[in-house]
Image (cartoon, rainbow, N blue to C red; front, side, top):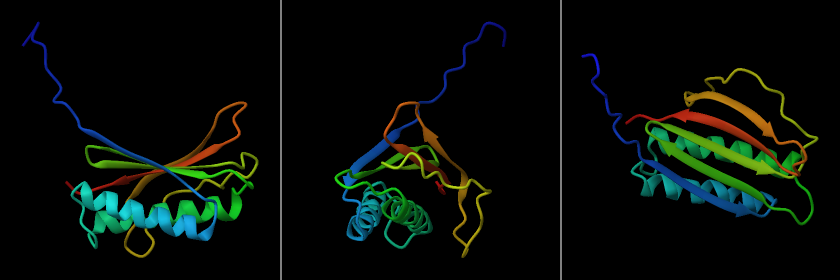
Length: 137
């Protein structure tokens, strides 16, 4: 109706942020903590959503350790759950090593990634590689 204001229902945003050592052990720890956080948020261990997000974190964390490691600097994992979309961000300290962007793929039946990219702020000493994963409600 004219003049009627529609109210958008509130959307709950849940976040998780943690620093990890830039080692293979740090990458494994990141995957395990993310799987536990997903479980706390209602996506149980072994569920497709938990496995998909954990797999994305494992891949991005392994890349941060392999290609983004700078001695004495940690990498950061950040999850942001908004509605049915989980944004996974992994920041590392090698801004000169950028990933080659391509289309998200459906590998092994877990291709729920709808978009991904990399952000580098001018003058920053960190880059952030991110992916958005669609989760079933």
